[in-house]
Image 1 (tube, helix red, strand yellow):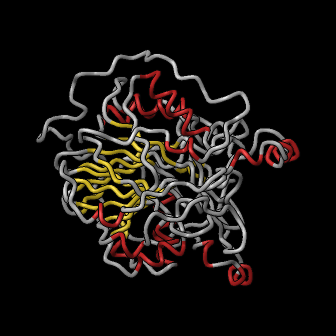
Image 2 (cartoon, one colour):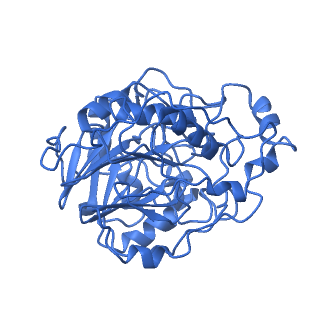
Length: 422
């Protein structure tokens, strides 16, 4: 891919609104100026990345549609959604930091008096069409309107299971600010978000909203929503720092050495939210296994099991060939082996990472089919838990890094999504 050609007016008229918008004007010029944009596309850290199944589609289809394996990819019973999320969220967090996993990669983070909503997906399907595509395996823990005011909505990239048209349109009618990777703002403007509420960042750029700092950090993934994958919208992980706490959201990513650099520059973190689902041998470059996710968490924490790791990007949609419960089991085993504290909340269950207790029970076992061969073995820790504090003392939060662009505006990008959907 060496260039970008917009759709003809006829094709543009036929595409659904969920495809979003193509880059143009100053936004497109800014994309082309990015140091991470080369030969007409955004480049991944760590070298070339395969975004399509590594085997033939026939081989992939044989695995995906295998009649014996398919039942394992969905829960056997009803996923237990936390029943009192609305009442629980009405009380402020005692420690100043609270996370509520809403399913998949959607997380409400209450941090030092601010409310940040990551990758909100309240739609029934992660698809451009309401009648097709991966459907939710459990309901949203609470209605979007019951969530209350949100200061910042953070989007990691423009795939359908992270950027949901119905959800964005509902949030467009509020006062929230949207922090998005470079190019993604075009979709939001197309769907009714005012340009003055966009903070559109390249990797290593920062934006301040109230008393928190948001930094877009590298990830190893790809983009796309429309008829073609033009790689004209960026993907990112995110660091959010308040006066006393710091958190990290991985978005979607394959494992790469850059986690160590992110940790050295911005960490350690009170909590990391790490993608550990929808992985496959067919696309090893763009999604992490649970073991890789734990390795990323440790990299982000300077090699020691500081903070709490919460697994995300699993349990809500069936997007790969692994059993439904395998990401949870794998994370449990990897965390125990590393001696790293885990948070394993049910969807909608708020918890405080720096509080006395965090949810740690394998709740999924009550509704998951046991995989043939049993669950992964849990081994003894290979790293002793650190007695050091998980974050720097108050007042020692690192200074802002990157270029602060609190009001960058432009128009932006659309592209084709390929397997996998996440």
